[in-house]
Image (cartoon, rainbow, N blue to C red; front, side, top):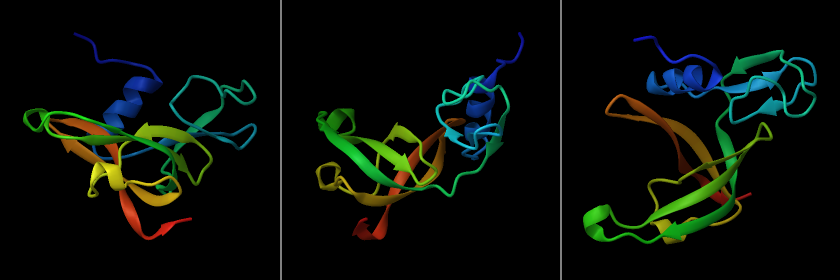
Length: 128
């Protein structure tokens, strides 16, 4: 069986190893996320991988209600990274309904059962 290939597979392998990377276009200098084969801004295929600062701001948030037996409520958030890309994730270490738009957060990779996932923790100081 061959290993998965392409930018999506590389990205997941890096997450599984505990590393969060995004792409940056060497032609237009804009950051790209979710990983792609070519830049959505200028069309260039000259994309490089880089570790983002990981800091960002909650752009939107919703609370998904779940039964306690299913793990309880969680938040689903859109996070604007300081590099200029938006991603979907969740903010941990807060009650789901206390996550607020404008709140500053910091990314971390959680590896569970060998699978990496980007989550965010609140930063002190609250909203931007």
